[in-house]
Length: 205
Image (cartoon, rainbow, N blue to C red; front, side):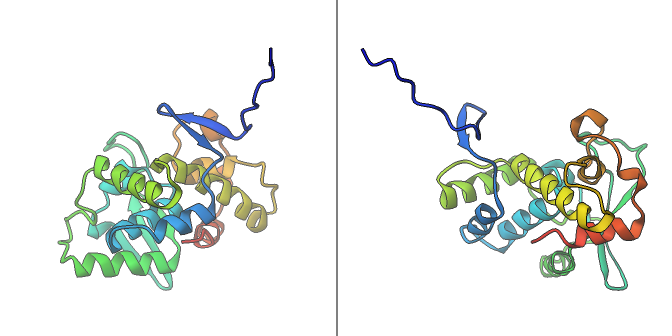
């Protein structure tokens, strides 16, 4: 009797009943961008990749939240899963090409100052990401996978900007908007505004 067992790759994870081999990579993201339905969907992927935003956070972005300060582009946001009016708005720097694209998209869509930049539901955003994943990679991709990719990228860039090793994931904790220290750890409060901008603007889109 054959008692051998086929090993499961160590990178395999289970996601809502589906087996996913390995984390999402930059190459996967680039391939997904080539399989979106239209520019809006591509822009959503770019935003998830370059910011680590949750779909609910993206759904709250108003045209009036987009800002430009000299050469820097940013979006004002309350970073939280649930709507919390007592939280202050935080300036999130954007990669300049992404900032330019967001402004151009909002203008092209004739979005009012108090109007949402992406007037679709979070479920629709998940479908956009999932469809691009199926078309490009043959599997359903969730927005949370972009947060994982963003966290790893931020940690690597922070090592160059701040001089700390990539294992200092605490830097990514605040930038990605986690509320609890044990989610990714807590350290980002020590970063200056210039360092924060330098890290964020280096995240690829």
